[in-house]
Amino acid sequence: MITTYNRYWTLWGCVGAILVMLFMATPASAETASADPGDTAWVLTSTALVLFMTLPGLALFYGGLVRSKNVLSILIQCFAIAGIVTLLWLVVGYSIAFSSGNAFFGGLSKFLFAGIKEETLSGGIPESLFAIFQMTFAIITPALIIGGFAERMKFSAVCLFSVIWLLLVYAPITHWVWGGGWLQEKGLLDFAGGTVVHITAGVASLVAALVMGPRRSFPDSLTPPHNMTLTITGAGMLWVGWFGFNGGSALAANGDAAMAVLVTHISAAAGAMTWMFYEWIKFGKPTVLGTVTGMVAGLGTITPASGFVGPAGALVIGISAGFICLNAVQFIKQVLRIDDSLDVFPVHGVGGMLGTILTGVFASTGLGIFSGQGFAEGINSISGQVTVQLIGVVATVLYTAIATFIILKIVGIIAGLRVSPEVETTGVDIDQHGEEGYLM
Image (tube, rainbow, N blue to C red; front, side):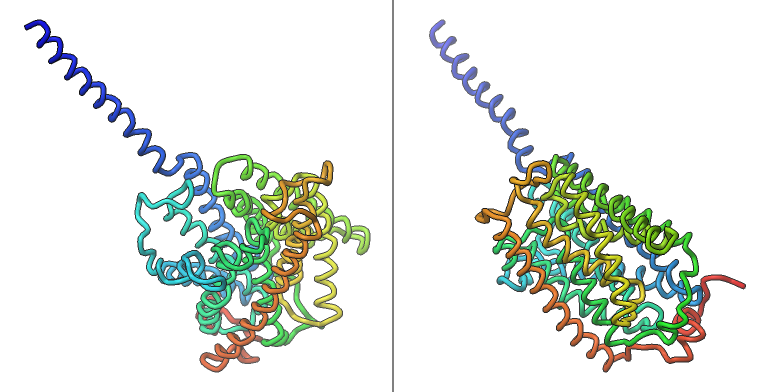
């Protein structure tokens, strides 16, 4: 009887031990399959920061640079693009960029965010968060382009152009670089958008300026920015927001994110100070506009490199950005006489190209204090990485230029591109929106 009793409790003791082990294992398994709370919190914050760069950062930065009679047109263009791109990204843009397809174009398996649920992961964060983080990049890129045709394009044309351009230029190139496409396979290093954002926006702005032609007052009687207070306020928002732009691209709260934020800040400061002192020495006065433009140049140029270079490399990149982009602005406007109204190509386009190429240099681990985090897998030399970077730059420039030209011609046929000379004289705000930015 005692033996039976002991066997009975021994049996239930084994069952109990097994149940305890199962209950203890369940939380660990669930934890393994769930999003990392720290990474999720950081990318949530970064998403807000990147949207903050467009609304209100870029809107104020650009709005202050134009004439008072056109300020509302800039603000509403940024606002409308945010809404248009959000809906397009939901419907098909995200799928083209990040679903499996071929080397050049994603498929439609993520149509309307199909398959994205609360528990769906992208690495260590929810896929819903990854999708909206990438959405904020898709928003700011066409918003940057409006600086190339500011004060003279119809609002209807801006909206139609943004729709077609996002689907035929931005989303495919995003797939090339970040979505498993051919440039990613080659080993292109672009941490946060030197090619995807800055080269595409800069080249598209240049093409738009050439197709549209200059403003009526260009280049003889251009008025200065109507409100530098708005511009420098927007510039400050861009500087802060860029921490999310670059740091958030690590998609984790880790050392990569911290280093990306550090080098971003260093390059912004170096670009601003280089531009400021260059103007001071050459022209006798350091302008506010030049200083904040140098800051933006430093930010745009460090963007592709931010996850791959160290602090000393970032300093060189920022100084190079301030010097080269300043001279690019003068060359575009004074020598070529191209009215890229708000200097999108010389600042973002040239900066994006410069930063993408220099990434191939300062990512090297063999440069002493200037060393970075290393080359792409399978690449063992600066020359090899720079070659891949150059291929990425050339491919992005050529595809963006050709596609943008065709899109502008199509939009011109459908909606007409430019406001009339009379509207340009009286102001776009009243004609296109029936409102004024300032009541006299």
